[in-house]
Length: 200
Image (cartoon, rainbow, N blue to C red; front, side):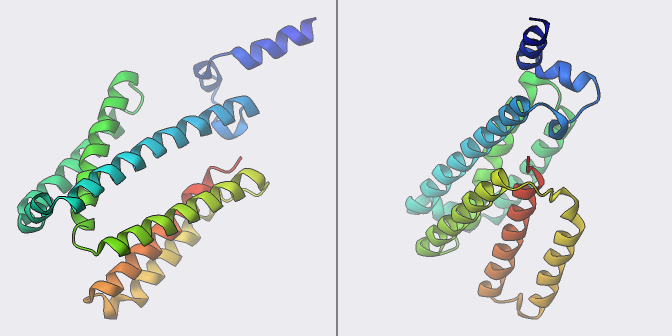
């Protein structure tokens, strides 16, 4: 009976209590880790859906598309607002209601910035990029959930690989196509690092 009571206490204890003892998610009980992963993936899924909706609106409506393309100052303002909201989010990351509001503000500005960038490209290329990125993230997620290996120490190697790709393509960086290659490769390596760094 004491053993069952102890198991119930472990299972239904709050996440805050686990972190009060200096532990991290990787060393917590499986139930805690799965709850953490569900929360992270839910937040990321909502953000990606919001970015997709905003980007679709910007691409679909010709007047909106032309506004973003013809006003580079507005794009710089969006980029500055994204950075300011990200900095504010970092400062208030532990304040519960504030951090979600700031995350929403950051997602809004980031989606407008991404929508502006996407408006300069052909719709078919954007759809292809979305499908490829989704397939990579889903595949890496499945791999991460089933593997026992820890990839969190590969940050330096992936940063070097990322830098190498940028340097290799530097000579051709003037053309739009090589910029797409650099952006796609950078996103690919960042997805690998993110997905595998949260392995359980």
